Length: 125
Image 1 (spheres, rainbow, N blue to C red):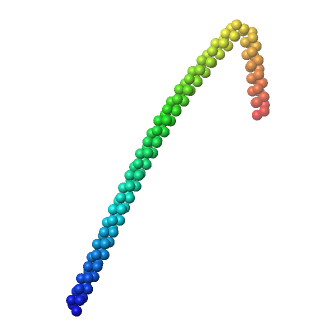
Image 2: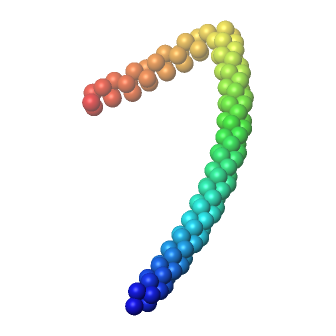
Image 3: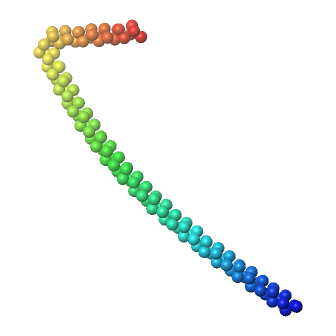
């Protein structure tokens, strides 16, 4: 009977060893699958990061170009307005020099109108 107990024990030990080996194999396979998935996710995140970085660089370049163009347009507008104001100042000075009486009457009339407008606003407040 001792032999049959020993044989049974050996059989149970063999089953346990095979089960342990199966669990180790399944665990190793699962671990490799998780590592592979993690590498895929990391690679995808890296690619997405590069895509976002490239998009940010393009957006920055385009914004810089747009701002540079806007600054040039503002400079041109400023120079144009400055030239117009200079011409208006010259024309006003020439007119006042050629027609001092009329210029004095126009200035007085403009001052009177401005005074009336500002005075009526003060009273309504």
